[in-house]
Length: 86
Image 1 (cartoon, rainbow, N blue to C red):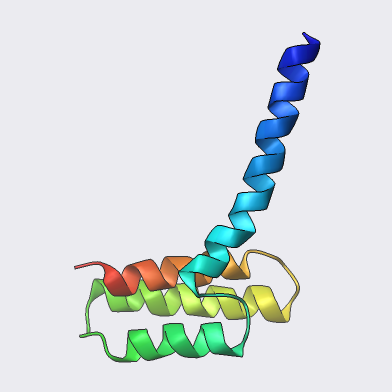
Image 2: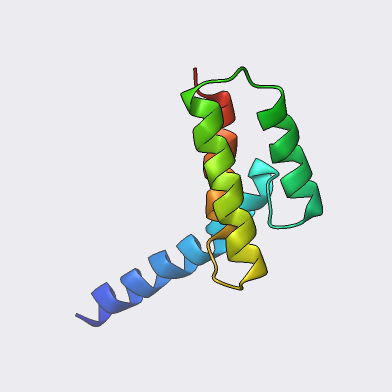
């Protein structure tokens, strides 16, 4: 049982170490550069459902950042994924 607990703790430690690295790799963070990059990608999109979804995610990210709600990076990453969708 102790082995399972240590194994689970090790997996959790790796997950917490990798998640921020993955977010940094995506190049989109909750800062001015992240918002500028995402908003620029959205502006270059053709009008349609994906653009509206991305704009909604940008609004949610701004709300999360300004009101210290958390989840800002998640919304920015969703917006970036919407810019890449067809």
